[in-house]
Image (cartoon, rainbow over all chains, first blue to last red; front, side, top):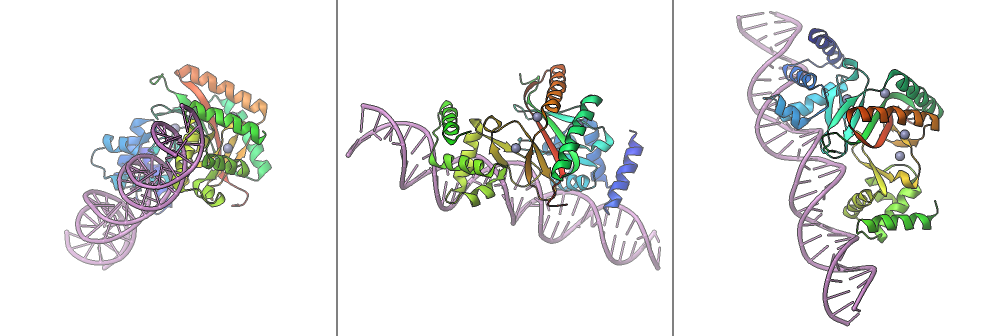
Length: 145
Length: 145
DNA sequence: AATCAGAATGAGAATTGTTTTCAACAGCTA
DNA sequence: TAGCTGTTGAAAACAATTCTCATTCTGATT
Ligand SMILES: [Zn+2]
Ligand SMILES: [Zn+2]
Ligand SMILES: [Zn+2]
Ligand SMILES: [Zn+2]
């Protein structure tokens, strides 16, 4: 997605929450976009120099509420963030139980469709309204083996 | 699984880690077993009266390291615990984004097998050693709708 | 351009789930 | 019983995250 188009959509999403797309928030989005993989807050603070820690935490909450970014929680100490699937593509996570790193991956369309079907059936049975599914592969990454 | 058999296996697992199966740890296992669903530490402290908070936290770590219990982490404030799949059965989680409650569910064997196949293929491609997969359905539970 | 009201920021303090400390205790062995 | 080692409980420490508040920015209005 082009930067201009992305910024337009994010502006719209934020305005729906009566929030502005400020310089600090743009810097956050730029960092997440540049990384292309889930990053921790310390990584964000290191990468984008000049951002205050309190503002980063606060703005990630705002961006998450607006649906711009997704918070990923693992057993690691730090939460991780990445751009929401709406701006990337539907995908899942490899979580390394040794180093804590999180890597995106995708299932092929057939496997994804089969999964969705099975999950919708379950949800219907128990009266659960589905917002999303999360699928993580936990193990050891190539670097840690 | 019978209580005696369960206790024997847990004793073995703990002894492998040079840990004892003490009264407090037995109380924790009994509580998790009685609940049959993932519970938070506050819920455990309420349910099993007399356990010290520090011991509960500490013993849950010990039990997790021994493979007796599983820690479930969500966006909620508290971690949740349940008996490890070895003592129950392989399953997944419905996570209510409104009340934070976590409910177990299972896929049918065919869907589970198809998923495993797709995941193993992915893992092999990127040199990832799989320990487990985690599949959560995020949405709104029947009570919160 | 100047003004003003509301929103956002930054530095640090406060909060809070969790971990650690340490003195007292329990279980085991000889 | 005495001694050794792992466990417990109460409270302190810890750390990721959230909150406070004085200052700065934004953008609409005059
Ligand atoms: Zn991702
Ligand atoms: Zn998927
Ligand atoms: Zn479960
Ligand atoms: Zn499964």
